[in-house]
Length: 86
Image (cartoon, rainbow, N blue to C red; front, side, top):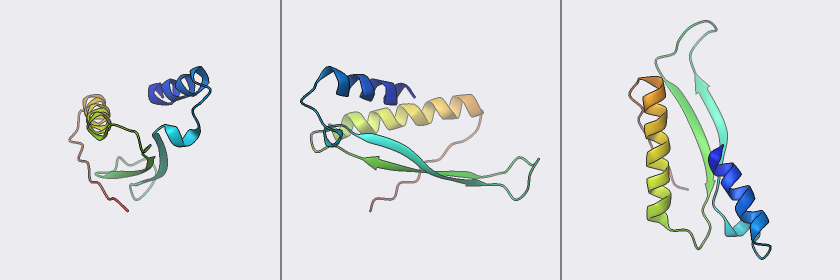
């Protein structure tokens, strides 16, 4: 959510920018488990990431690595990241 708030302020502050000028990250799919009231051994999430042409890819990768580490700390679990680029 902090990233979304940052983008909204960024877009509001610079009236010359459009949505294509910022990188967006949206959760688009979640799946896991086989029944209710059962902790699954695996859980998958999918994100739609639209990278602005002017984005610094190293900075984006660092941000994603930070988010993954935050999830790992909060879940006390091993979180693995698998990337698929289309």
